[in-house]
Length: 446
Ligand code: ATP
Ligand code: MG
Image 1 (spheres, rainbow, N blue to C red):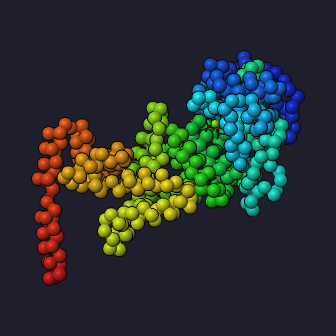
Image 2 (tube, helix red, strand yellow; image 1 turned 45 degrees about the vertical axis):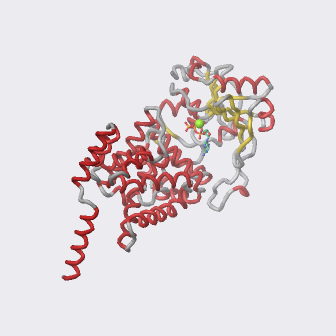
Image 3 (tube, helix red, strand yellow; image 1 turned 60 degrees about the vertical axis):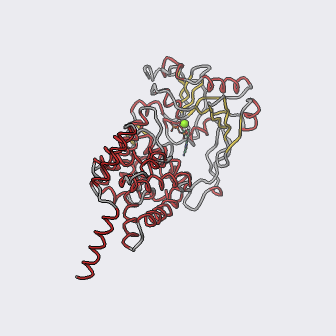
């Protein structure tokens, strides 16, 4: 791949606003394997071109094709406007406000089609920190390339002619494994601070170095993350955590000081060896799941990341005289109201997290017949996995997790005997009450 890079075909005369010529490479130079391209993306490009428009596969899909990786989704960029695009396809929907895009559907497969955009130079669409609030001005292909985030994400591929259009030296950076922001990094991060999180994700995921000029303003500008709406940050954090490189992402996030505005408790939590081990184990498991083609539940991920600050709040409410269960829910409320501001955790997710947490004391206790009820609980599997993680991190005895593993795999008579064993080994509640009564009496006498 990339052989004969310098023997490029100087195709179109298009110049970027920076005055750079677009480089057009033929198939023998870029080495893209057409078999990795989706037939539907191909179809969308062909339909648009047949109707007289320019159309290309663009962005992450081109980057992945050049790296020889099968892209997980395909974006198409065109000079057709949303209404014109919509008319060409049977199932096409215009969506979005900030970026108006068209979703073209073929069964379950979705191709995102965007009209070329011009950089938003108008001061009226920025907030006081320079963040772009709208970005919907249509432009030329050259302008569209300028407003993309990284050089390696600003390449266009035409499947019909099998040519690659590179405006900002993306192919060279890909070859040198460098992530470089297009334009002035300081300005580009001010326009959209989420780009800093994208630097983290792509550098971790692709194993690319971060160009020095791109890296320089990241620590000074890290607090701009605070200005980004929580819902957008949530989406980006999920992408980080489910990138298959969550561990690496977390460490780059911390290097750049970006975690403080996403997970303010993280520094304190990771300073404790046991917590650090717990989070590490959880992220390693998540990464392994993603690499095995499985999904990772956001509820489970956040339940692990927030477990330790939650435990501290739980302890605090207990010390203030609350009983175990009400204290647990108060602590969960504290954590959610804190995180809700940062990441706008949706109700569906907070309810998953609350269930996983509130099942923990019940799973540890394994009280009599309630064990069967726990098994039927919708969230049992997640709570059990969470319990195993706590065992492996050394937070609770391994015996608790082992007991559940044996119980799950046992037949009915074996389950009964496991429960009977527990009842024999655990002091009965009446005996416990008597003992605690005696203790209270003694301390009153003292
Ligand atoms: P992946 O989908 O593998 O996570 P991607 O590069 O395709 O990576 P998307 O979020 O799908 O990422 O975005 C598609 C393209 O849109 C990017 O490749 C980039 O060119 C452009 N883009 C996305 N987000 C931004 C942004 N915040 N600023 C500028 N350009 C962006
Ligand atoms: Mg993409």
